[in-house]
Image (cartoon, rainbow over all chains, first blue to last red; front, side):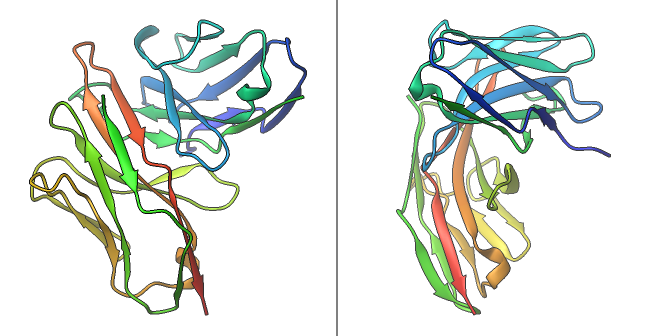
Length: 116
Length: 115
């Protein structure tokens, strides 16, 4: 079975532009979470979605938004890009949330975003 | 809020040496604890987990014990290999009323194993 897939692999954008990152979870997984990993640091939680509903949001500005589709795939959108948004964006999927299969999160390879 | 503190790296060891990477945490509730590993150019892989006090997680020769009294989850391996060279992240997961499970990560510890 395929793991979590993300696209694109790499992306270069200019300050002020908008970007959309995509994620497909492991087959059978209904929850998707997004994390931002700045170089040399641990990942930071951005969003968690389950059954197309936002279940949690980290400490990120409103420029960051996401959605989940009926097939459980997800998109992360970032508007008005800043240099500080340059990072590896990781998507993770889990079977469910909470105590129903939400414990283990499986990560994709990430999308490397560079903002110039 | 929640936080995870790991020992700073890099940790450089010779093959077959004993490994310890320290990890302590601060959490308002009763979190689950994890170790993830990140190989160069790749995403994170779950290495092991523990969900309650005194639980020992183990995988691929690595192990860590959930110590509630010292709020620690140190990673150990008896004999490291060159292939273990990677960045190791300690993390905790809490549970909110909405069912959200957000991972809080430490800053990572780079392990370099020399032949």
